[in-house]
Figure 1 (cartoon, one colour):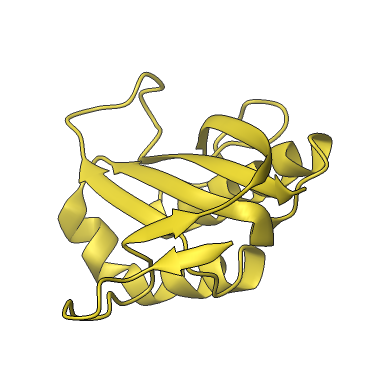
Figure 2: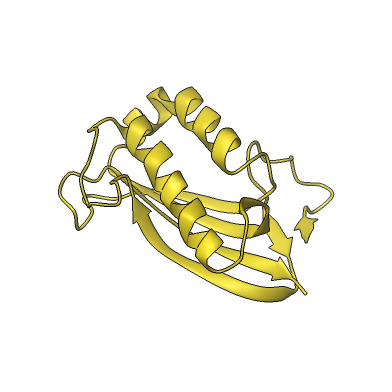
Length: 130
């Protein structure tokens, strides 16, 4: 995996502008912050983000992938202010569960998610090296 960083651009904080990878691809659908029984243990965004990331890791494992194989991740959040306010806690969960890898990442504020109590949905693509 190679991080793509145009030389004149400022280095992004916490993500990469692009990633080049070769291997077997694993696609993870949007994961939300509920448990294996489909229950939301918390209505806090940071708590749901942690659980959504744990769910991402579990799905990756089913495909033989690990967090370090993630090349692209998209976050959909229902409240960008809440995301920013709880950013340190969300970042700590990300570093603990995913790591400090250079992932091409996007975060988007959306009006709502399909599950009414969901505050975040995270999808990603991983590439297992050939």
